[in-house]
Amino acid sequence: MFYNVSKEDEYLFQGKRKRLVEILKTKGIKNAKVLAAIEKIPRHMFFDTSTARPALLDHAYSDKALPIGAGQTISQPYTVAFQTEQLAISEGEKILEIGTGCGYQTAVLIEMGAKVYSIERQKTLFDKTKLFLPYIGYKGAKLIYGDGYKGLPQFAPFDKIIVTAGAPYIPNDLLLQLKIGGILLIPLGEGETQEMVWLKKVSASNFDKKILGNFKFVPLLQNKSGN
Ligand code: SAH
Image (cartoon, rainbow, N blue to C red; front, side, top):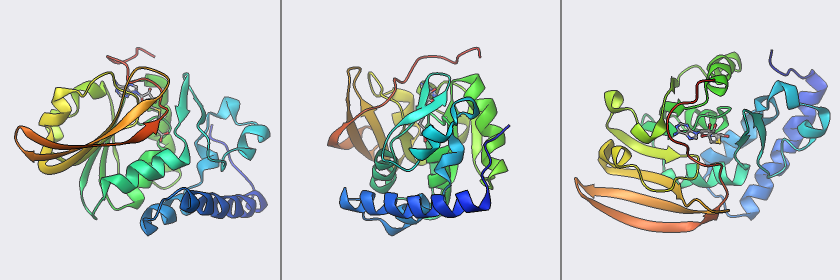
């Protein structure tokens, strides 16, 4: 069911990952743990098996967003590295991810030592990633099929919340489920690009806010999909 590569291929992919890490450094990523995670995780295995042609695998370690099935994409490595760095994760922190997709960002968060909760609204992607992450050795995450706009009140509060799809507005439920002192990172906007919004909850109703540049995401959609 999942794409598998030979030992020689694996050696080749390790070299490609090292080069990707160098590219991310030149683009400004500094956090050593983030870079180590990108160097370790086999990104070429995260693609949709039906589209995992050699041509696509060749691009697995270029700094691009690529298809993962169900009309969704795996985020660009720079975006994943940037968001992870901005979360400033400490070992053992409880993190909520909205938009599991193929689970690549989830694997990066696990490598950071976080306790990860991740929500996906596409049933087919959810079913696949739930099998795939443990298959490649990432067993610790709690994966949930649901609507990320609502967060996970039963597991709140969270130290950090990361949204990996472009939102038309900041869902109030996510603000409520953040710890005081916690950070929410959310790409905001419905157009071609989104502004990366960084919010720190300084009290129950007060937030510090920064805008961290423009990025490109698939949209954050309302409600669960039936398939
Ligand atoms: N984190 C992924 C990014 C996947 S793209 C990675 O590492 O590559 C964004 C994902 O968000 C898609 O899989 C999409 O189906 C999902 N999504 C969109 N709206 C959502 C919502 N309301 N709740 C949960 N997931 C959502």
